[in-house]
Image 1: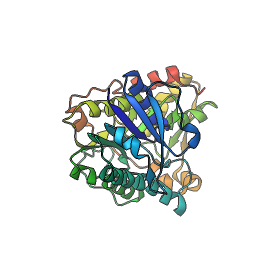
Image 2: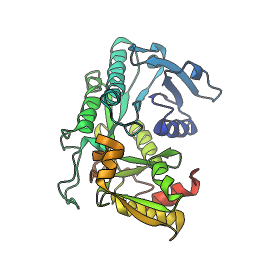
Image 3: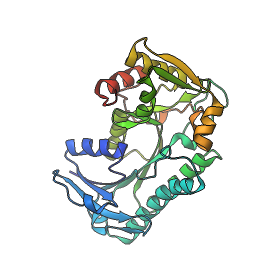
Length: 314
């Protein structure tokens, strides 16, 4: 089977993707900065060194790879957006992409395609709610921090096409996983019976189940006709209020209290990041569906039921 080289392979998405690839008998090499992760007892899984800041990468790993998946990047919602943190968010993605391109140019390789994560932060807020015209891959990047970040992120890998390789970029919505991420944050207040609705709760969330996202990447590896940008979101975006209430009902039945968190409180707690929390973005997945891809969890009800059944968060 083919060899897949992954950056960000130990993150939420990377871990799930690695597990699925190994199940399908792919060989996986994870690029890591951590010396301690250089050995693996798992069959078909190995680690290789890279350093984005030092612009160094294990050229043997590049030479072995049939496909490269670029997921690495500092967490957008992990810390308050200070000037330093915003630069880390940009550099960790853009410099990583540039290093991949540099390595492909300088190292003899057999790489057929490069797949990269991006985000629906590319798009601006919905002009109206509901938005009768969901954002498509043809919409330009919005002129805010995340829009500019996604633009630089995607552009960092554009030279891959001139090397005669497929380049696939997934503008990914909020990823729902039982292992952490956004779902964990929403579940925390529910432990105390509080269902927090952010702002007025009308803002639309474009989301995707982790299993569907993993299958998208594997589909893109196998389908040589796939090329360019795709929105990695479910067919059915929902409002923040709908999402929270669905989650609360599935988790606690009727034993919860809906609480609206006012915008000013979000701004005090999160600073500039609060803009993204209350931003509405209705994003279309028609392009990915046109490839024949079928979502296992097209509705939020199906996704929540699946995830709560195996969630480690009480």
